[in-house]
Image (cartoon, rainbow, N blue to C red; front, side, top):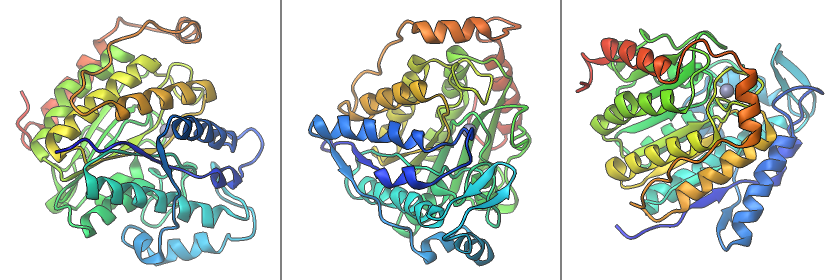
Length: 361
Ligand SMILES: [Zn+2]
């Protein structure tokens, strides 16, 4: 298959989703997205404008009551739960965020090239009938349902945000055509994502949770990907891979206690891209979720662009030394045990639960 270049999907409109002062999911995150998109465009890359998701596209994964409730916040500020807020334009911007992922899916499905979708509000905590955890509509889930409607017989959603994507799991928990794989800090918000949650009914085995103890770093995540995520993704052989990427497992992130460096994120993205190339012909849509340290968010997004824009089959980027900011953040964090222990424990627990469903060693 000829190499299809990466496209970015974003808009400076996402800065207009306002949250209260001090809220971590703040408009400045959109400025980081803009800087990444501007640099990509300046280098000759393509940035596509998003379109709003239609009501029918949203209704594929959300209840009508939920859609009406969020639409009802149009033109005003509202608190939907203690973490989740709207501003006058949030309904339209949440539709635009969900629709941005569909522009990405169209590109990936048509050409076999990757798309990077830079959006806020994030989506993976939004359930069928509920906004929560900063999320109004479930962007990745809307994309997965759209991919199915566009002819993908199997869609994999891989979620490497530091938090469990309870919404994405709930929406597809009984659907054998959509695989949901999540790595996440555990225990942590929102409390779901135990290793024993494997899906329901016909969807049993199509939910793969890999909870990881706080303090895990690059080695731990690399091990989890190599021994659980990649083998499951390979066996499932999705036609379309959607990656919910939160950069809040970064060592500098204020909301969680993981130790992943920018180089660690680069390595994870390289592994997941190579797997998507192998199983789905490169039909890969990467959509942003969390990531609340702005310098870390910017550096990780630059690394993501580098990985996704390298020619298919190019060797994954090697490791890189930690930056001074990463070293300082890591030194300030407690570390009860050596590197790799949390990864080994997470892998062992996931394999014990998932072996009946997957060819795992
Ligand atoms: Zn998160």
